[in-house]
Image (cartoon, rainbow, N blue to C red):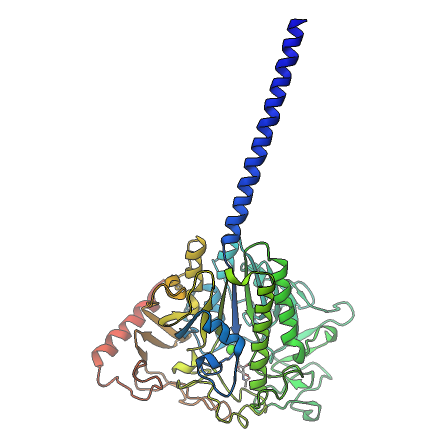
Length: 518
Ligand code: NG6
Ligand code: CA
């Protein structure tokens, strides 16, 4: 009996101990997981808001007096406003490619303005900004303009649209297939064209020839509500003729007037869906790229015609997104970076009053050139970083470029950058240092300029000094070498090349060295 009692006692003691041990383990585990969660939440959310063709002088925080942009200004005034912030290139595709891949566009043959049916521009398997953040535990998403190619050659838009953003590191994508002036005029959500009925009304796309019976802007100008000035006279959709031909897919075609609200709604949903985990959102606005078609709420609001109206519309959306971050109590620990893919242009292919109603507004903000140009207005753009938790408001003259987001944010989230051209300038981006990059190659393919310190060198280039009579922007190309001191001569009026031949020589050598780096 005593034996039995002893055993029972032993057993009960053991089981009480076990219970205690279990409770202790559970408490330790839950404490640990709480801590993990807290640590996880410490990782700041990251939002890159990327405008399309917005100039250095298009926002009031960069000196615009005719166009007032209070919401974009909020990022600049409550964060760091960079005076030497650059896109790598004066057009969209190469700049976006560099931002996401950390690779200079001149290293990538096809990194120039792509047609709407181009295959995906990225080599799969290489690190990108989104894949790096995904590896760091972020939920990554892109909403808005893409223009980086989709799928392979001869892609069938009625099937899975792949590879695309989801194959280069984005966990979620809701994008415009190409540009708002290029067919197909559809959105793609993850791998599917949104709203398409492939069985009953498949969509067909061609950049070579029109489809039988489909009207074009060239032949039927009476069908248009916005008329092309040059190009843009092919397939008609929503009263606007575009670049390229398409047929069918009627239920999937976007309505230009609603595009801003479509992307804003998606962005707001994205931050709500992922409010409890670190997220990265690339919110790629389509404004003020052509065709400029504001929602009726904004039509006529700027007095500068549709170009001004869509900038106000974009600014309003930035405010809406901020309101949401405030509502969700996320704004304090969310890094918001705002910039633009290239400089400004007025007539970029449609008669939309951009030229006639410009008045005193100066989109290039005292810089020379504009979109397509090697002069500074082609690539120097509004560039600002807001992160209330860690970054004090300031103005910085550091040389910073969008190509550096990957290496800089990798340093922030504890990842290793493996991209070739992105530099870690986190201290400059967060205001801890006034020093950014030492130098930067600007341009695309072999058409380049080289910024080093306060100077910019533009090597001799063949080709026209002007774009064309509509766009009417200086390309920056000259058969003579050009050297400017941007600090003393922001408008690039005084070519110092002859006065400083030794500097020209050494900068030319540096370009070659960077270009030959593997
Ligand atoms: C040009 C288009 C222009 C714009 C640009 C790309 C014509 C005449 N012009 O070829 O309208 O679409 O390409 O702009 O077709 S970007 O911002 O996407 O690089
Ligand atoms: Ca652009």
